[in-house]
Length: 158
Image (cartoon, rainbow, N blue to C red; front, side):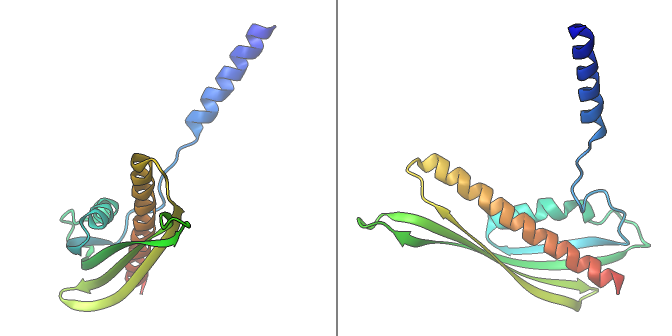
C-alpha cells in the first residue's frame, strides 16, 4: 500500500512541476516595435545588465515594425549611511541613476530619469558583501529596465 501511495505522490509531483512554467513578463512577447540601436554611456556594469534585459527586443530586420533608438546614460554611487562608535561602516546605500531618451528617426519621443536606491548592512566577510552588492545592483537595474520597456510600450500604444 505504501509503495502505491509513494508512486502516486511522485507522479503528481512530476506532473505538477512540469505543468508550471515561469516566464518573465516582457520575454517572448510579439511587440509592434523593435529597438534598432542602444547607445550607452556611464557605468559599465549597469549598462551590461540593461543591455541583457533589452536584447530580446533588438532589431531583427522586420520592416513592418516601428524602430526606436535608445540613448542611456547611467551612474552608480555607493555611500556610507551609518557608522558604529569606532567609525566603521554599519550600513551602505547604493544609488543608480539612469537617464534615457527614446527616439524615432532622430525625433525625441520620450525622456526620463530613473533613480533607484537600496540600503543594506555591512558584512565582515568582504566576499559576501560584494556578492550582496552585486545582487542588489542587478535587482535595481532590472527593475529600471522594466520601466524603460514599459515606457516604450506606452509610446507604441499611442
